[in-house]
Length: 397
Ligand code: FEO
Image (cartoon, rainbow, N blue to C red):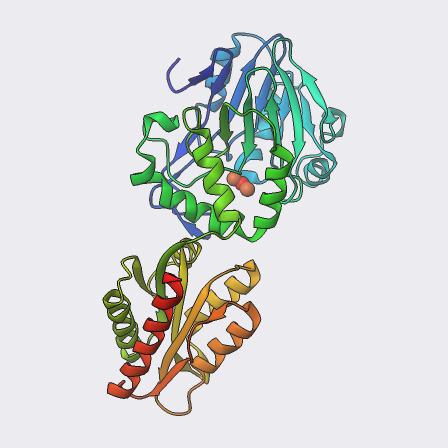
């Protein structure tokens, strides 16, 4: 069968790639696309693990039909009810009307408002098991990663963790499906962090709770709902998610600014140059008015140092910076070193607003904020250098 992939002898990947959608969740740019991973376990009983986004793969049903060869599907295990995985539930139920929908109480509270199907509910609780014949599945409740009903399904027989969105990534599967078939560092790692930080990151404490639930479980395969399947270096994906959910960062600096006429931008370049002279090699500068916020958040999740700049706009920050700082507050991002700078033409306000952000987020402010009137001159650049030096010193500690 084309376009189905054996994970193990009786477990198949039947997902699909989406290269058409521009904005995932109508919000996040996906220039590299995304995969929706669905899995089929063919045993004495047949179980489907999650479905795909409605309409994302027109041969989804054909793949199932060919693999089950005239049999029916006994169970649809719903690890996550978000429509990018539950979109095909109606189609599946209509085709296999005797199917049982397997989920927890919170799953069914959502299903009720989407589809109904009360007569098909097969409610499980944390730690319950479901025997398919050879395969024995155990359900692990991992709520709020990143919806309330999220859970994982662990195949005790072959030690496969069907993890839902956890351990997922942006990026389609271009031929390589498994971690040992792809160039993870070059192609996926950055997109995986961008996926984690923007989609799941707000719930990092719940990711840590999920890790506690998984402690002691022998995992040979990680089968997420997006991105590659892990079978060769499972610890790699587990440790990346562990690190990101603990807000562990690299020793580098991201400078993000909002600038209308280039004065604040000049200060950003000046700070970056001085950081470089201090020996910092990992430095990224973004113009918040041009670069999508998901990339800004990705770099904030990556680097310990965050230096934010804004010109004044109606006595506040530039709205693009306001959007960024409000989102960071909403996400509760932790543990960064912070520097602040900006400029104004009449009575200021941008840097004052950035300082209010600092008071809320409570990162460590490495140096006094720099606010300058008009075109920055030597005095302003000297003060920018102070931010760079203080940041570099903290990073070297
Ligand atoms: Fe991939 Fe939360 O859905």
